[in-house]
Image 1 (tube, protein in one colour):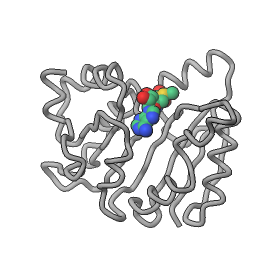
Image 2 (cartoon, protein in one colour; image 1 turned 90 degrees about the horizontal axis):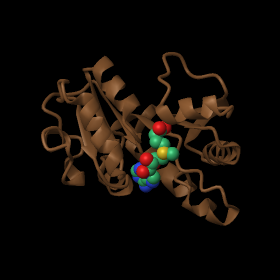
Image 3 (cartoon, protein in one colour; image 1 turned 45 degrees about the vertical axis):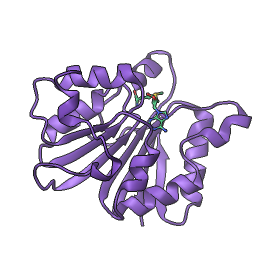
Length: 193
Ligand SMILES: C[S@@+](CC[C@H](N)C(=O)[O-])C[C@H]1O[C@@H](n2cnc3c(N)ncnc32)[C@H](O)[C@@H]1O
């Protein structure tokens, strides 16, 4: 973390999209956990700018380990909750938003704490380019229904849920654990209309 984090850390949300080159697109991951997907994507897509956020210290320290030997020019990290960063992103600046296995908040009275709500979808719509993608996954049945319902009822998004992973999908550690335990992963792929 001492070596890698200072090179990739976003210290001011307003500087979240500052890269040393002009990326072809920006892909944004919310709550990257241990960072396995982000590490693999940034390596495979050097012309894409990646912004990841994760408040969990063990998560971003693991990501630092995973990418320590990489070219770090296309990856930036915000090690706090996503909201201030989203607020600071310019309109129509992001091509893809990934939200993989967000916390389920499974008690009914806690549903308002779920990341995906109508207000949040409006904010994500603001930062996404027209035709931009919102990709969400979960193996929690209620949360899957909730995210599908929320995204379907929002006027700015169109899409579907499937139990088949999109082409080229990378399985996260969390997703792998769920599959071993016999849970079914849902993939929700939405486009900003
Ligand atoms: C169940 S874990 C999934 C991690 C990873 N996406 C995966 O699939 O393995 C949910 C993650 O979301 C992060 N998180 C929760 N609320 C967040 C927020 N408001 N902004 C960004 N990350 C958040 C948590 O710290 C946690 O690491």
